[in-house]
Length: 297
Image (cartoon, rainbow, N blue to C red):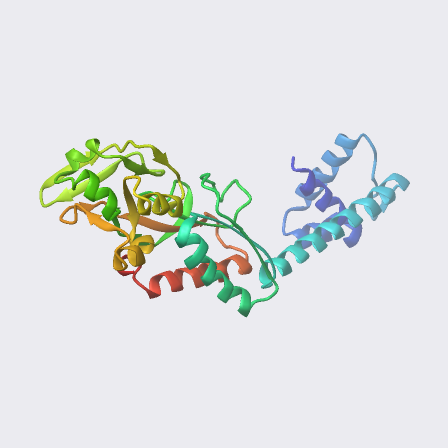
């Protein structure tokens, strides 16, 4: 038997003064009320109620138990009310895990400052670590991540696709030449990040390359710096490459090959309803990411 159901039945009898009225209050049978109170007394090994054919009264032990349990239930009610008020308020912490680099540290951060300006009672905690987190289990409310799959058991919305391309500095290409096909990349030093493979497509031709090189960093900014310094060929997103390509610091490599794009996901815990403070931030990010085409930047 559920402890709470037993205590609920006992307190209902105390308040109503009879088993019959308590049963009416809880919309269950009189026999069910009597059974729950009897099971409570049996579990405690103490008589809580004196019963006669005409009345019900508390024993001293019953009075003590009533006061303590009623106080505890009042605290539970207060906690539930406080929690609901907190969930409905636009205040409190919003914890975000995101990919780093220009995407997280510039675009996402700028979007979050817009929400912060509108709702100054929100407290933003932003983590740019590369560890994959689970919003259902880890202390995080929203996750911005890239990849083909947002993860299992989570709620998610794809908010864009990152266009990827290969690039290298003019100095490196003057020294080592241009690869003419992805299969030739093994002859070049590759600047690598988190992805283990680079996938290329040109019409019906498909090729997968597993890059190797002397510079490995999960940070796109660190890869960009290495490429500009002439250390090798890097695979980077259009968000990072716009200015370096325009200014001639980098040159696109294998431009006639399409590199498999990466989806960008906003992920949150799979639950019936998010706290209002989290839902407001989530909705703002979805609107802002959809308001411009990341792939065209």
